[in-house]
Image (cartoon, rainbow, N blue to C red; front, side, top):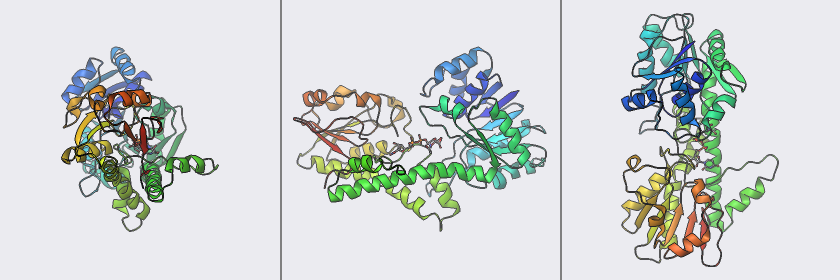
Length: 418
Ligand code: SAJ
């Protein structure tokens, strides 16, 4: 069986590799010529555990190759981004153009799967009509489905195979046909439903997490105002068998949690109250962090502040929608600070400001702010800071370093300043 996958990013590429490993003939399509050229040599530019090896093997076996244009196949999988516009409305342009791109190659009986996250009703109201216009009966001639990806960056190769998978068809038959495709690679349960239910389920998964993180962030602000240790409260409350408070932090980033809830708000603005407020609370965190930094350094005329970690979470190289980037930019703009930035996972060309080594970042600094929970930062010990900094103060916004205030070192967490 042949599969054509449109979009070779964080989802499309591992998906292509996993299907190739399972014996499918896979052609991966992307608009980025560099990605195509590299992939055909068995190389990739994204960082993901285990991915380089699986891709290399798939390309060498001849089961995976890359091309700039789609080709006829038995199944098509669309894995392109769905960004949000400035006004927080979903931008499904990439999905629409991917669908239009494959239409000339689609034959009756083919399975067409959209994995990209899409607002509720997009399969019914946007994708199906494109096939109708092209002369297909979308309910009879083809099998159209939405199968949202639910993998966690850093664990993509494991979760692609092991997670339960929602398969929502435009028709029950479409759902079954799409499910058959995933059954060849997925060991988790395949959950068959309607397209619109699949769309809504995917969005609610990420919304659930975003709302819960907002609750944790609000808790940390409340604790800051009342002089209570938020992390201790979370630790203790979570010993209740039915409570699972999430972790506060410098904000919510990435291309999923910081975006998907808006797709629901857009479709039901009157009803989606908690969802909207949660987005606002999480978006307020970078300013809150900068405020805390100002208070920690208020007594120094032009403090040197080392900012460690730029990615939206630890041990990845992805800076999309990263609150850390927002914090860095706000601090660089503020003439009060002398800012130095370091991230062991980020390359200089990914960001608009200079990056320095860890040693250069902390040398002579008055404050270190940890903004991502990379493993590298979890291994740092007190002596490194005491020896290198002008004033050894660490603001651990991710509560990840394991450092506590002891002789010679002051450690702050989110929300611990009154
Ligand atoms: N975060 C917190 N506190 C927490 C947990 C996370 O502040 O307690 C922050 C992280 O630092 C990060 C953001 O939230 O900035 C998002 O990170 P994440 O690890 O929660 O999730 P993503 O965006 O990497 O991946 C999510 C996952 N969704 C869920 O866990 C419900 C993943 O399974 C989805 O496939 C992915 O979104 C997606 O593509 O939709």
